Length: 314
Image (tube, rainbow, N blue to C red; front, side):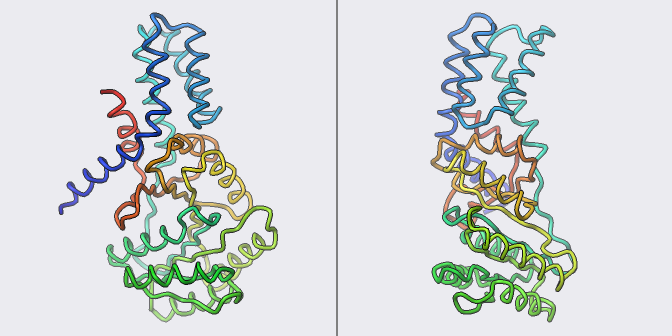
């Protein structure tokens, strides 16, 4: 299958995956717009209510309403139907600012610390990333630094075998920083140029675990200047507002440099991506829309917005 066919297949899958988000977000918007003959304050109030109900957040909604009001004032909008065009363009403008693929250097060791609460699809994301980087010609090493759960190590072992990427691990309850130390030592011997480190599903209430993660960062930085080069936060789109609070927690605690939004397929809460983009300004690296190896893709604002509106416009 060619690259174009793969891309087209993913776009169709994205459209299907966003169906519930589209229904929640655009059905109400369409109903409000179609039921109106003119643009007035009542229309804006109804739109504001519908958008906030769709998880896009108050900051995005406020910017959108402001853009619509300005367009009306400048007489650029002559009918309610044109409002949907402003909605689409505003979404794209906000998401474009956060569209930033992860670029791996050609030389040296690149380290990725993957963080997020349990159940977000963290281990699966690591497996898929390892597969992608290997396909791109990188020598990859997976690192099991979630030593608190035997299941976490076992899941990574399964992915390691599935994608043919070696795994560095120690026994359960080992010091996670020691596992990372070993992995960097192995990488320095030329065994790999990309390290993907799994971490425990830390909650903000578990202060000792957050401190453990900070210690891991210190050890990595000491052993390899500049490491970790990426702190990648995995969020589950189905959790809606919980994903927003997790973005804040991890950003405040460990400094997130990139986001992965998983499980966009089959949720009505995909609009949360707009809220996170608007409020936290963290680069969105990847989105996940299924279980397959190729169902984790680099985020494209153009594809996301087109997939969201395409069927909704028909």
